[in-house]
Length: 158
Ligand SMILES: CC(C)(COP(=O)(O)OP(=O)(O)OC[C@H]1O[C@@H](n2cnc3c(N)ncnc32)[C@H](O)[C@@H]1OP(=O)(O)O)[C@@H](O)C(=O)NCCC(=O)NCCS
Image 1 (cartoon, rainbow, N blue to C red):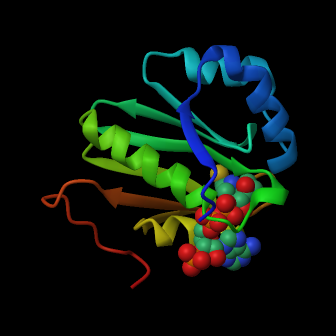
Image 2 (cartoon, rainbow, N blue to C red):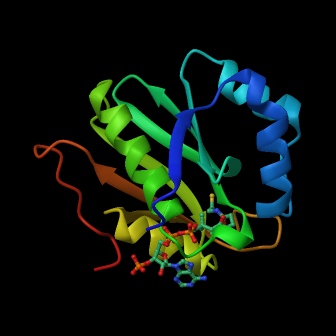
């Protein structure tokens, strides 16, 4: 893990920054307006990773009732493989757990190996699969993590 990372809450004022990061992370990059909507809603939770003074990663999530959902995580290519993805996900899980989340969910493309390693490292397990969910025909895997000991989850792949 790099020792220069600073994670800070992301606000609507950061939408253009997130848009610039999205372009480097996703083929279907969200525009600033979409990011703004995502962050502005009452249940929106978002963070930026700052390294050497530059925004290099971000995470967008929701917290609805006692369930969180991670919607986007991205780290710019130059900064990948240094633990920033894990730092962003673990920070999000800790923050939403503090705010009452009992579990967190996300969907990930079955072919996204890097993201799958990241999420499994953080403790997510697969609970479902949505066939041909993405425009390229790829399946979505539904992953979940229990944030309280009384919330057991059985990995549907085992
Ligand atoms: C997925 C993503 C956020 C990971 O960010 P990152 O900062 O590189 O992740 P980390 O450095 O914290 O790595 C987490 C784990 O994944 C592993 N990993 C990272 N990239 C990998 C790759 N391409 N292939 C296999 N494993 C990989 C790391 O080795 C690490 O495992 P370890 O703890 O055993 O070493 C980044 O690759 C990315 O932005 N991808 C494009 C956007 C995306 O697909 N987001 C996720 C879907 S919403």
